[in-house]
Length: 505
Image 1 (cartoon, helix red, strand yellow):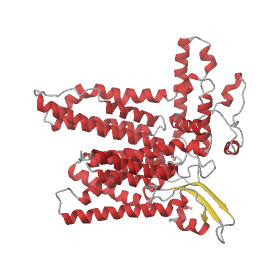
Image 2 (cartoon, helix red, strand yellow):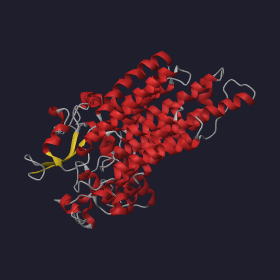
Image 3 (cartoon, helix red, strand yellow):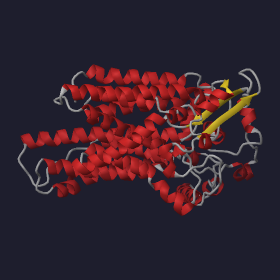
Image 4 (cartoon, one colour):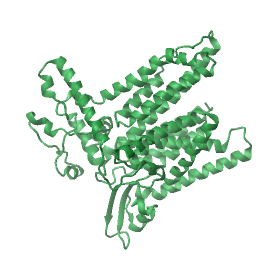
């Protein structure tokens, strides 16, 4: 790692503080229930009130935005099933949204608070993991800055949807695995220098960083089922890193060492622990009556043993229903898009739009929240990903491989769902891969600047090019900022910011 541990923390913390300011500034605006907040703000309020999701009454959004939380259908004790809401996503993300409502009230600021907080923390995590992967504090801070300036990350950090929580836990899990990689290789190198040789090498301990990764990735699945793609891919990647480390120190049976010494603790960290985290996220459903498919009355009347058995059976049945729901989801939507169009930002999602007839010029005023990435970052990111493919083919560098793997498992499965299931999908499904797109950009920036031993002219020109990209990203974000934050602007100014007129409107 580079010297200067103080700046290794202070730099990323300053960048994260900048991103936090952007995200918390006017967080309660628009004072409205935006897009799918109509589901998650109410489900979250129900969770912190009843422990389970319940059905709301007609016009619940209007009542909620006016401060009235009496929005639930009333049911007698004998008809609880009628008031149980059938939800198709696990509850952890809604519990986090609900925590904000519990602290700050059921207001737009309250239900968006933890999205903004974890969005800001993800900037810090990315800056730190990029620093560790590049061994450069400057490049780490660049990664954090680019994430802070990405429009899609910014909008989702200010909206009570689940996807920002999914992104956070995926990134945190990946970061923990990168730290675990460094720690385990250091321990293996220390063993090699001080211990007798063996064919398979040593056991490397419980590896707390990999345990933390398993917990975070289990939490990702407990937010949205699509987290399972990252869990499986990162688990395999971690095991392959172990094999590579044992092979690198010259062990005669590196794969035997992996299966004998690493596999048992790997199974605990990357299989058993994520499963426990996922099931634990449903604790509210298990311990409260009134949840969808809960069958509480029948279970409690037959004794404690049957209660446990029937609860698990009912829960499993519920999971199966959710799986079949997602498999056949084909509801048309004005802002749906196909996954192969996402990297080019061809069809963003209008989370909010409101026009006012006067006050801003001859064509009135507009207020908008457009869920779109910052084009400079996304288009440069697409080029960087191509560079990562070439770099990995040429050198097999583990960093390029890790970034490509994460990007691929977050993006390519949606191709199958689009073709086989014709599922309704949106651009913001890409948010879990945005940090890895930025990691590709930063790794490419490191190649452009060159190593410390490179000719000074090359390093100066490379640094100038990278600095110009960062400045362009800042200008691009600043230009789009009014249509990301529901700022009141003239209609003509809003229209000018719809860069791809036929697709963005």
